[in-house]
Length: 172
Image 1 (tube, rainbow, N blue to C red):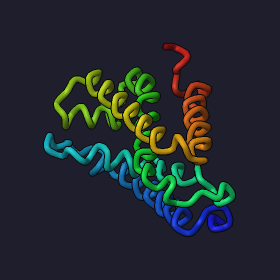
Image 2 (tube, one colour):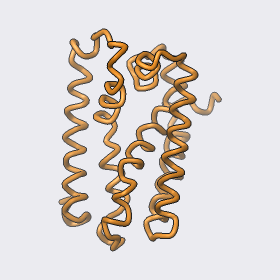
Image 3 (cartoon, rainbow, N blue to C red):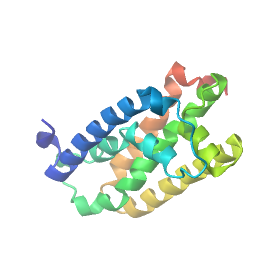
Image 4 (tube, rainbow, N blue to C red):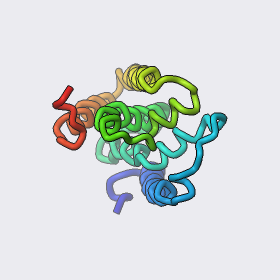
């Protein structure tokens, strides 16, 4: 039971993130959505879909279980940046394998399309957004007890990607 390990609001948010993930995956598999021609003006679509299919909000709240005795006000200010960081790290570290496989139905490709930029320029923008989110989070949490789980998460999340063969990062 989530409520044994997280306070009410974080537990509720974890539950909602799980529902968003399921709906996002269902949405992504719908032929009409999968095959739709993405409008150049659909600026918010790439991140809308990305955020639904990432479960990042669940991960963000899971960083701060009840037993850490952190007040929600300590970390809630950066929750959305933790979500952004989590999603974008995955997109950056998945790019190599997706590019080699010719996959174009992903965040970086969709963002490149709507921003009318080259895919590599868009990838650099995503890297820049990732680093900016990391800097903001680290600055806000730096003198709090929430900094420790944040740093552990960053190290573990990045290491996770590098240790799995599916990301093909050993080829770089």
